[in-house]
Image 1 (tube, helix red, strand yellow):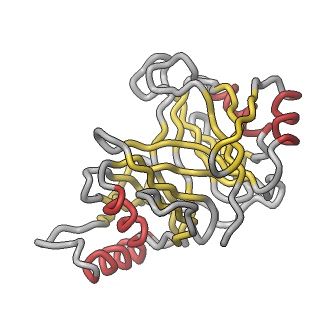
Image 2 (cartoon, one colour; image 1 turned 135 degrees about the vertical axis):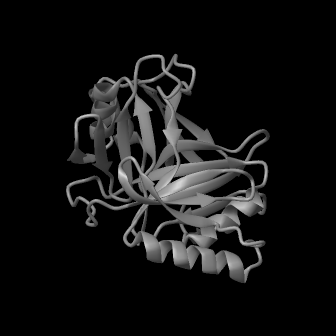
Image 3 (cartoon, one colour; image 1 turned 180 degrees about the horizontal axis):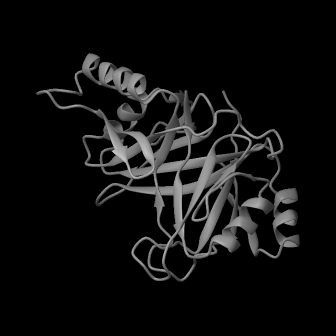
Length: 247
């Protein structure tokens, strides 16, 4: 299995909980400083951070898998077969993280992320089925990043333009995007919505969140005030893009 489940560190857990609930997500895990929310497709984990710390407002790119050992084996085999993995290096390495069993994936651009063993497998049926969690990988080497996502079993989906962007879906939920960017590789967080954004905008506004709708080249995007705005690690808004029709 493969499911998108980034981790967002924040000192404003309650505000994020209110935002995610307004988006139609449902809390499915609660261990004090660790809370997990299900969307219709993919999950997001909230991790408590100290106010003003280096972690506060930061998102970590991450996925969930079923069998960590088997996931590592398949990922390394895929990298070996296409020539990415050489000189005894491993793309995927099982590790023992402070939260349990996991696998670290290391990419040619220097980016790395964890595949954690899923605590539970079923997606919450009460979550808004139109909402998907999106994890973004910004990289100066987008082709290498895209190959790494292929190695972990992500499924390519069509993109509207023949450029360096790459879109993927995960078998068990969520969206993974690769976007070209200068500088060191870094993660990003967003959402997609399968349907008109105006009703979602009304729902967010009714819940007390400032939300503006913009028309962009390939569809509409809703920008919601980020609960972490003003911090060193936080953009001003959280974005929700209208899901493009598959071709």
